[in-house]
Image 1 (cartoon, rainbow, N blue to C red):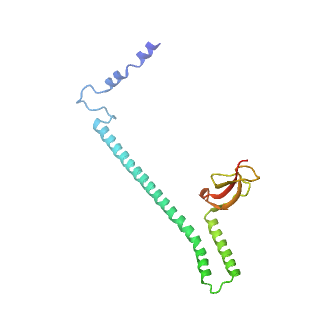
Image 2 (cartoon, rainbow, N blue to C red):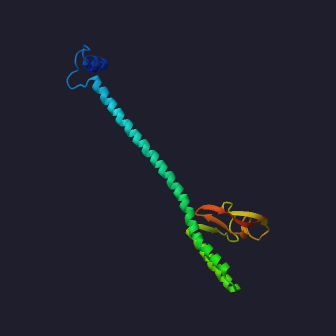
Image 3 (cartoon, rainbow, N blue to C red):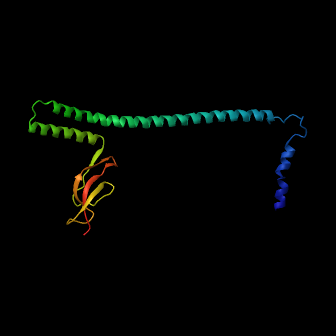
Length: 184
């Protein structure tokens, strides 16, 4: 059966040889482009592909440049936003210093109002306090234990907060400074 198939379809090299003109001076068969035409078409296609490559490369360079500019602007405006939120706090402190004869009560009221402004500025800029409660498990990602003290609670838990910590969004800015219960 294979012999019949081999006879039915001759060797591809033989087909190619029989399809080519027998003499080089003989013109190409009608409908078949000459080698010069094929070369010209291939060169045109190559030039077209080269132009498309250059356009794509330029577009990639532009996207990269725009992304770098966007990152730089984001950094600039992030600082600008925080500074804008802090200006009213500074204004309040300066006004408090200009008061001729402040009373203890008026100073306390002014400080409370300024603290509200500061907390509002922190909130707008996603600055979050880290204040663990006594008895919370010590978290080395958010807490810094400066002392281990004897306590009636479970070991490695917060006994007291000495200084609040702060996070910006999910990133730790400053850990909460705490004392922790020592193992019994």
